[in-house]
Image 1 (cartoon, rainbow, N blue to C red):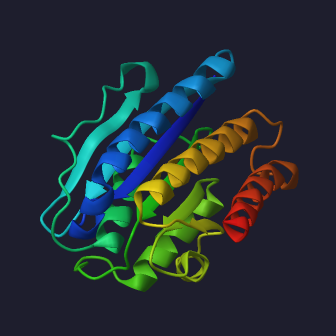
Image 2: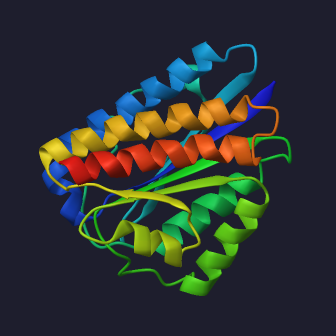
Length: 220
């Protein structure tokens, strides 16, 4: 049975206030998508969720490697957007914390969601973040960067992240974005069941998923 860790790193800075309700609903939809993947691959996969939200007041761990069937609902009390965006510190600390519990045969997908650029980190440099992500990619981890108010593809490339797409930081845009997160989660679960989860054929599954999402953006 393959253990699949779904790590979500979520921006909780002040600018996310305008899409707070959609973000809370979207996280709960993402949890449901992971539950669906667990049911579909019940004989092959065991899914866990970690959720870390961040702003310059705090980096908060909401769920820490919780079995998907035990994940509680995400609520208004959990998500209170405020302050600035320590993106590097949040991503790197969340990766390092999860890594202590990940075995070589486990599968990990890290999904980063932010509506703004880094402006408040103090612990991790850009190079330290790139090196850490590159190390985990070489260990088989999958990273997806989702950003608004920026060129997400360029920002992700600078972080050594291959998979990325943009979203519009509006009510409708946030709703569409979380629907796309569900598609990405489905693609990753499919990859995990392939004979070579990090082989060329498996990677093509994620590349086709991200490519389709980017095509959707072009049509909007």
